[in-house]
Image (cartoon, rainbow, N blue to C red):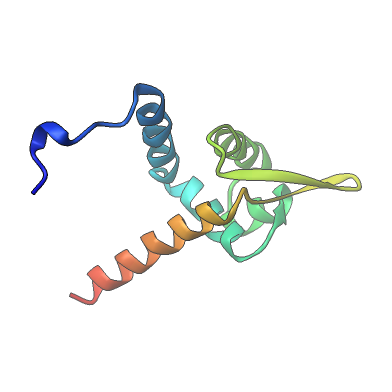
Length: 106
């Protein structure tokens, strides 16, 4: 059996980065963007059209998502397509969706 004194909390840098990730997921607009990018990579104008807010507002949210490492932009000629940064983010996103679906069926 593990004693409570054997449990180590995350380091301060790890804790700060983890909290920032959860904050990024905690905004409805950013969550919608992540939802779309979990399906396919998209440019800002298409994200804005689907979400129904301005391109500048989407760009601001994408900047925050890039800073937290959740999304990345890939240049395609004159435009930049955004996608989830890696498989871990897709897995986290899918786990949250699955959890919500299961809780809705309780």
